[in-house]
Image (cartoon, rainbow, N blue to C red; front, side, top):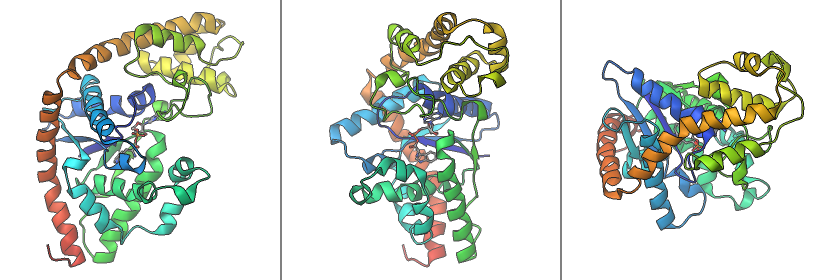
Amino acid sequence: MRVLSGIQPTGNLHLGNYLGAIRNWVRMQDAMTDGSECFFFLADLHSISVHEGAEQRRANVRHMAAALIAAGIDPDRSVLFNQARVPAHAELCWLLMGTARIGWLNRMTQFKDKAGKNREGASVALYAYPVLQAADVLLYQATHVPVGEDQKQHLELTRDVAIKFNADFGVELFTVPDPYIQKETARIMSLRDGTAKMSKSDPSDMSRINLTDDDDAIMQKVRKAKTDPAPLPERAADLEGRAEAANLVGIYAALAGSTPDAVCAQFAGQGFGAFKPALGSLLIETLAPIRTRYLELIEDAPALDAILEAGAQRAAAAAQPTLRGAYEALGLFR
Ligand code: TYM
């Protein structure tokens, strides 16, 4: 079993990232008792698909590294690094360009969403993004990739690339990975719109809880979250058609280690005036220790850089055999 996943170091780590992905990374890391390694990285090469200044990008990488460590990623047990320090990612990405099909990329909903109406003006990196993601995963022979629902399609493409490359060149070079998506937290929705996912690119900061939000901000965002006037039902099935309410109940259940049915049973008949403060307190209880640790870690940039440098060395060594295998399979001298 080899676990690998990545996150773009743009913007803040938010509750959707945390419940959808990072919390599962930490759980998988903590469950590894046989010395197997987990690989977690900051997808800074992916971040060039949108424009950002160099200083900002450097700061973002440190911020996200600090946030991941604060959330429980242990750089002694897991390999934590940023993509750009491991050139094998960019190299394998190019080698896979001959295997990935334009038709596959044309089907990617994330490209369609992010490019919007201005497809002609989108960067080539935004379009080819899933090929780099395939390289990220295949380089390390990952078997399990813990992600939120929105990355499922990219992982299907990763599987297609692995299968086609192996078949085209008659090799068994790449392991075909499985996405690991936890159903209950696969899609945490915006606090302002129960039909849109919580996202760092939403212009309204009120739509998301950031891991860096202080207690007052968390409580205020929960109090202002969009809901409806009806009380909570006895069973979660009766939240059908109430997207915002279902989202808040789902978040509560995920944080309490409970189920939406149990949360509904607990609050049945009560309105959001009673439920929201309880949810706010639970969020503060969970996030405050992470925020405190994050604020300490971010003060020590040299220590973060050293962690990422050490992680990159371990990652580069792990990636080498597969990269060499890809050059050989293609008949390229290296
Ligand atoms: P990114 O940076 O958008 O998000 C990081 C992780 O958070 C999950 N996530 C969510 N889960 C539930 N609800 C939400 N509202 C929500 N928002 C985000 C994402 O599914 C993801 O797991 N392309 C990737 C980064 C990447 C990667 C990889 C991932 C690059 N290479 C290789 C896995 C394997 C991305 O942009 O994630």
